[in-house]
Image 1 (cartoon, rainbow, N blue to C red):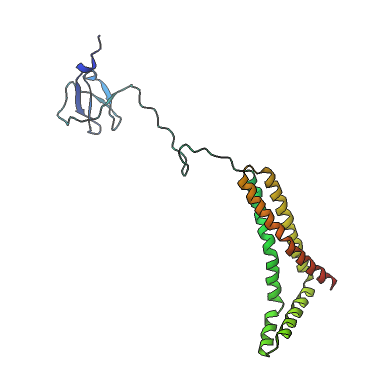
Image 2 (image 1 turned 90 degrees about the horizontal axis):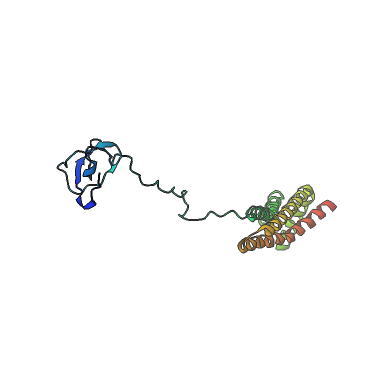
Length: 218
């Protein structure tokens, strides 16, 4: 049987028996099963059109090739077409160096707050102020209170000094490893800043070491 030219074909319009939507097919599919584009159910095409609006979607014959599956959506938060970059191996070492650097800076201040709070310095200052003592007497009282606390808690000062030294060594070691493994100049710059900050705490470590040595000698 010869194929009917496209310009000689007639459209059959009818309603889907499944969803009631208006659809149409070419007359060559009259009496055959077609797929509804709305509910995707199989429905038999009638021999003649029904009284429905003219503009209706085209139905597809059953067994006809369907459109390909849509491409998978990008993960939430990812830009379409974005390339996932591998994390810089220096990031972990940079984090370790930063944490150790912060702890090395905090250690002497924590020791200072403990020393001031437990040495009775504030109480001594209040007593001298109430007695209208001069500035030299107040300074001598503060110095004596701190000296006495240092002599009584030499072990605490030594532990703080050793802890701070460990943070400095670990932070510098992690920073050096990160600097070697860094892939970008930005990471190298960040690690360089961290190393400078850690090295700056060496002066505080020297002060603590001097206090610890004085406490041990006393």
